[in-house]
Length: 122
Image (cartoon, rainbow, N blue to C red; front, side, top):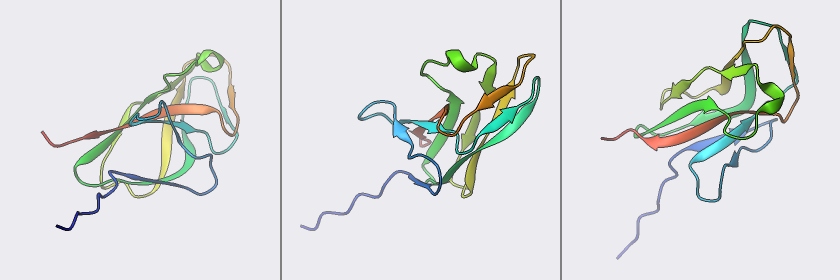
């Protein structure tokens, strides 16, 4: 009997960013960090590059949400929720909204958001 090789459920490749890390050992939630330093002006929405290319199969979707870790340094930053699917094959950029009245400085490596992968088959 020949055992079939399991295909990965998704592929994250990172060129110049930090390697995405799992929230916990067997978690399907990854913490995505900022690839470059960026200033987000007050009351604006900007696209923040993560430096990560993503490719996922037809049966999986990725859900991008606010970071679950301590976000006390960036209370005025909100990640706009996004869903990605198998048609997403470019560098992942995250839309971020600064709801505060002062600009916010994100540094390379700052935790930006979470991405969780779930099956889209019902």
